[in-house]
Image 1 (cartoon, one colour):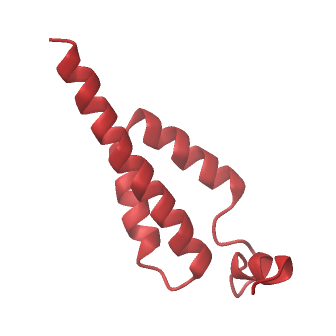
Image 2 (tube, rainbow, N blue to C red; image 1 turned 90 degrees about the vertical axis):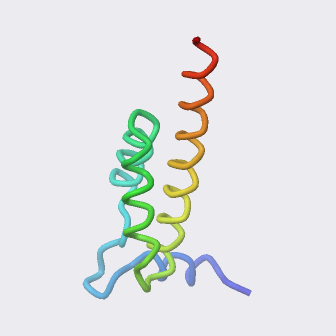
Length: 80
């Protein structure tokens, strides 16, 4: 069972900085909502990394990007 300290340590890289900062996370989420390709590209890039926190962020961005593609396609198709 993971403790809160273990989860915080997963988000820290070797240099002591977090792998994905909250500002970066928010910026990519907003960018993904506007342009889904950003979420797919960044999600794939971060999902390939070895760090568990980077994989988690990458998975979330990838899922959001794919969902936003589907939403955009459905909105455009209903406008016809």
